[in-house]
Length: 231
Ligand SMILES: [Mg+2]
Image (cartoon, rainbow, N blue to C red; front, side, top):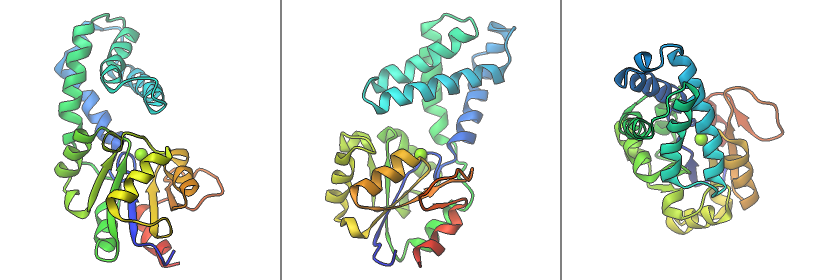
């Protein structure tokens, strides 16, 4: 991987600890809106489980362009509330807005994120390549002190395409000047980050903390990335 000049990082679940940040936010929202009073038969963890289920399902639809951003943001709470027997579209909307206010300001990063960026920043051009919403990703990067590491912050909203669509990589190349033989993608999603980039002619490393078995190059910890780059 000695020809690599540009490294594109996914943000959610790769550098930014989406899981912890999101769970913290959901627990806060549950308290703010006093759901324990409105749905005494259910626990906050049950509500959070239902939210996570609907959110993942709807993100799948969003990725396939079968659901809009605005519908996703509102419907994930509407469905989770319905699962604890609260039918309240207005409440769902308010909770959705609070989530968007609070969550991107959370600052937990995956272990080794800052150390890896520090180690790589002088040798490579670093960029973000994310399917997340643009303004949300900018807040996350700023709040968690990551913005200055990246030359380009490319989101699917800016590119008008989503990973693994070829147009997303076309856009990334045009805006960074990166060539296929010089580009490496690092991300947690095998299909979207790794296979998508490889199909386009980039190199890729799967950030795979769970140690899923597959044929692709992967690391369990972010700090293994600098070592792999020397090979
Ligand atoms: Mg990700």
